[in-house]
Every structure is written in C-alpha cells, then in structure tokens.
Length: 275
Ligand code: FE
Ligand code: FE
Ligand code: ZN
Image 1 (tube, protein in one colour):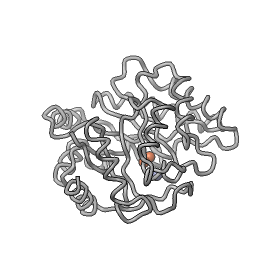
Image 2: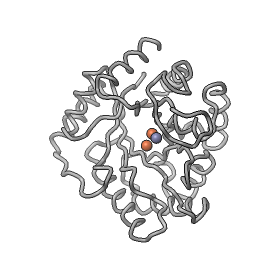
Image 3: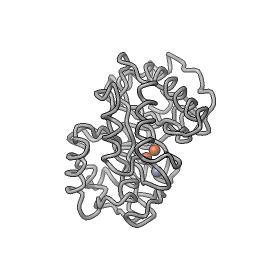
C-alpha cells in the first residue's frame, strides 16, 4: 500500500487532521506533538483520539507520524536544556498512547562542540530516560543534513545511538530525502547504492518512514532547505523511485515541502498520477 500524505497543522485536533488528509488525497500525515517553541502541550481529548484511531482501523488512514518539536536538543550540553528535551519526549510518548501503534519522529540534535561520540551517548541516554517497555509507539531517529554540529548526518551515527539504547526493538529510522541528499548521499543517481549502505549500516528493516522533500541545494551542501517536489536538486524522477521503494513496505511517506494545503493536494496528485 502506498501511504502518502503531508505535514498538517494539529490545531483542530486529531480527527480534523484525519479528515483534512482524506480531503487532499492523503492516507497518512504528520503533525507536531506541540508548538515547536516548546511549552505545555494541549490536553488530549480521548474522544477525538478515538475518532482518528477509528479512521486508522477502517484502513482509510494508515500509520501516522508524530514529530517532536525540532527545538528540543536531545544531546544538549546545558543540563536544564537537556532535561527539558527529556521531559518533553517522555510526556510526548505518554500522550502517544492515546493513538497506539504509530510513529514518533525526532531530530537527534546537535552536540554543540561536545563531539559526535558524546552526542551519541547523550541521545541514547535521553531515549532510555523517555522510553518504556510498555509503549506501543515506535520512535524514529530522523536522518539529518549534517549542518553545524548535528548528529545523524551519517547512517553509522544513528546506528551507534540505537546500539546504546535499552529498547532497540522500539526504535527505527525516518529517512528525509532532502536531508540525506544535503548530507552527501547520492539518491539522485545512485539510490540503490544508498539503500545498500543504509542496509549495511542500519539494516533496511529499521527504515520505517520517509520524509519526501526536494532540496534547494546541491548534494553535500549540508543546508537543509526543503523545496517543492520536482523543483529542486533531487527532482521528480528520483523521488518517484523512493515512492516505489516505500510502497511494497507500507512505509508512511510524508511531504514537508513549502506548501499550503492546496499545494500539498497538487503534489500528492502529481506523485500518485506518476506512480
Ligand atoms: Fe524533521
Ligand atoms: Fe524531515
Ligand atoms: Zn529539514
């Protein structure tokens, strides 16, 4: 099954996101668990969560992806900043149990001069402090562009985090096409080779979700500027190859392109028509 959707605003609640997704030809979506600037998350209405869970049970909506606020740093050097990331993640994962069996994606963070190894150690410690054996959610580390001191620009770094965690079976990876391109992986001309490298470093079974974005910058630029599908340096053809990889595996594919809802609807139509 091809699960294709986009990032949606969560302001109207869960069921509203499900209906919005269906109205634009999507059968999955992503949302921020809370305001990216952090702070208290809105209380969850169990009936609202139930309504979305029902849409998922009916098969209309496939697995969905919750995205942690990108402002938290799971390998921060300042103790209060690190503690904030851990409390946010713990609270998000508790809330995710209102929608059992979905994905929670986060940015591994920036080591801010502590070094990649210390960053990896702190990220694993953050995950261990937030995850529980009872949770039904699979936590995804997002592949990063490698800008600044970001951890996760190389597949091996993500593997090193997973290997240090107590619950590796509840962890996976979300591949962001713009990020891996900007990090230097050639998905335009050598997608098969990139997949082979992913398999060697991480195991393809750990690849559980895709962020489908074009990139404003050339390969290896380490920039992380998303572009609309087919208008950037990756191009429609290469992105269609990613869809053909995701479809038989049932991976949720989420657009994070610079679009309003009508723009997302058009991109979903374009991708489905070419598929
Ligand atoms: Fe992200
Ligand atoms: Fe992303
Ligand atoms: Zn990005």
